[in-house]
Amino acid sequence: MNSPSAEPVAVPLPQGDWPDDSGALSGPILQAKSRWTAVRWAELPGWGEDPLHEAWNAWLKSCERPGPVFAPLCSEVRRLSIGTMEEQRAWLMARLQPYRVDALSGGAEGLLTAYFEPVLEGSRTASAGFSVPLYQPPLGLAQRKPWYTRQEIDTLPQVQAALKGREIAFLADPIDALILQIQGSGRMRMTQPDGTQTMVRLAYAGSNEQPYKSVGRWLLDQGAVRDASWPAIKAWVAQNPGRVNELLWSNPRTVFFREEPLSDLDAGWGPRGAQGVPLTPGRSIAVDPGSIPYGTPVWLASGGPTVKLQKLVLAQDTGSAIVGAVRADYFVGWGTAAGELAGRLKQPLRLWVLWPR
Image: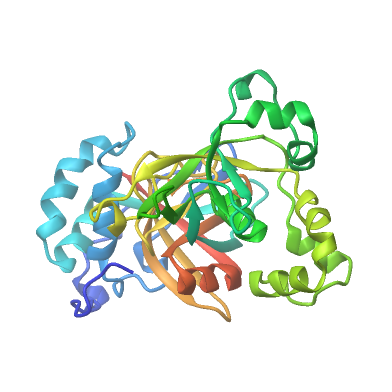
């Protein structure tokens, strides 16, 4: 997404040139939702082939808000940001131990999906063309858990009164608003009342804490579509305009936002994840923190019809649907191409955490 057009190519090290990895392996580590089993570095698929400098940028971001386990390593991580990939790889093997992440029940294979930042057109004021509101968190949100459902938000006068004046922006398409809420953040070209336009980011600021239900699954279960991609969902909406609310209300969960400026520097990174640091396209993942703590470097391996991935990533985010031991949501960036990839990616996953020795 942001990387230069000409990048160094990773040259695999012959296994004999790797640091010695023949010592005794550590015992297993139990997390709330997973079991970690120590393995040899050679078990990691594609180890030695990944251009690690890309992941180093994400790791430097994690070092802006490191947890207690990785904070002592951050000075070395910063120094190695100008090192060669061979030096980075040798340091990883000397300082960290790979552990295979298994479910407590023993399964080592899970699910990989992807998420992205939509880029949308919005208006500061409501009009016939821009009538779908996006809200800041309502006052008193924390006093009622869960808060009102999506249908109640749209229909109950007292809920409408609680949200009056909390509008950040208005969109033209209710499905775009739903996509933004599901992804959790997005970029918006905002038209101001005087007609000028500015680029801003709408970042996650809370939810109604209702359960998430997939509108695509709702359509599939009814036999309304055979393809639950966003283009197919939008096509169904165009053919069934009288059922839009029925579709939207099948998902009771909604998300509230805060507006952030989007400088040229900020535009080179994704939104801040749950760790509190900006996400890096292709190198940040959302995880279940009960399985993998935020800020942990993770080796990710996934193969399927959409993409083959064998690479170092950083656990920097989470999401309401990201639950379980071997489960990750892969941040792919922003815009149309990222959205198409995120909509297609659903394939098997294996994970190894890289933990200090």
